[in-house]
Length: 418
Ligand code: SR1
Ligand code: MG
Image 1 (cartoon, rainbow, N blue to C red):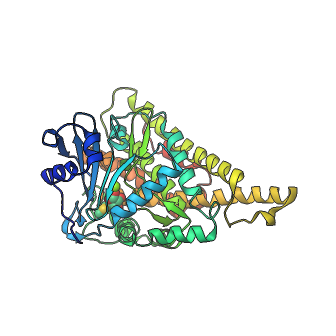
Image 2: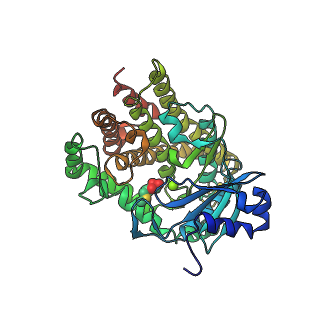
Image 3: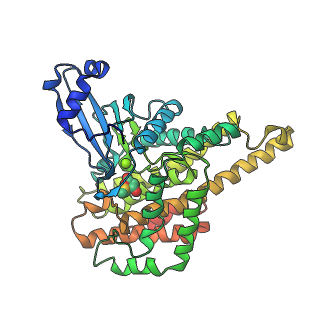
């Protein structure tokens, strides 16, 4: 890997001291900079560097999975794909990703604006915080990044170049293929769940052939449907927020895949925050208010995403799919509009399935989320998790029963105990 080395605080200070632009941006003498490693994700090192003028966020890929250790090697090239994806997202959804300041390919290191006072959205939701600007921002991000990298907006040649540019990120895709689409449904060393309460449910998943067919169809769709450039890991731990701002971070899993995988990730993580809420200590009335806001947000995320995506399509379908010459005149316009609606219905069905897959992996797989993990009482945690799994199993196996987003939120409301 050439001159790659892991940069701990001292080495990072020396490295940045030699980069005039960064040195000026941070301000003051490098010896006086405050440097802290703050990474709590599963894969990388993350530092905050602060000086007299300002601060920056620094992400360095490790040659292995941080969560597991050196026994699980992982290519440094993921930093390249993350940088590429962030650059593309900045073009397509300006203001919704962090500003890129510096990238060093050899060190697998990227420097970005320090997002302050933003926090990881998942942490805010564990504290029952509502985010009024979230729906508008995340739906703009998804509609624009997905539409403008799809065959609806690109020529066939541009689209294939896009696919090729991200094709090397297959090791990150493999993590998803294993951890989301395979391991939770079989005995796998790294699986864990809230034992003993969920032992029975874990065994049921391993024996549920209809579920195995459904998850395998989703896996195939994930592997073989390069519809658009995905973020690839769009959970609420990859979103930083204030009450009025949203920034999408961490697209190291980016590749060309099925659009429903990103949209489903957002919906799944909102639904998990909803189910986890019952297990957290909340002020009187706070729980109802938060859970109601989350489900309204689920509804609006889908409806606003669909509206914005369709508006982009109606306004500027410059891609090679659906050639305009085939839909001339009033009859053609009407038929194309009906087809757009059918396209969104198929995308919704994919979204429902992927949302279910994203939920089950967080409860039975390797990587869990703090929405559930911070519920201290294991019995309460298991109750919240079991409700989420019950809905997810239905969404995955009986996807056709969930024709609208209200069918999902309606089912979630029925599982409440207030
Ligand atoms: C071993 S990596 C586990 C998970 O962390 C990332 O955030 C992705 O969600 C991945 O599946
Ligand atoms: Mg991440």
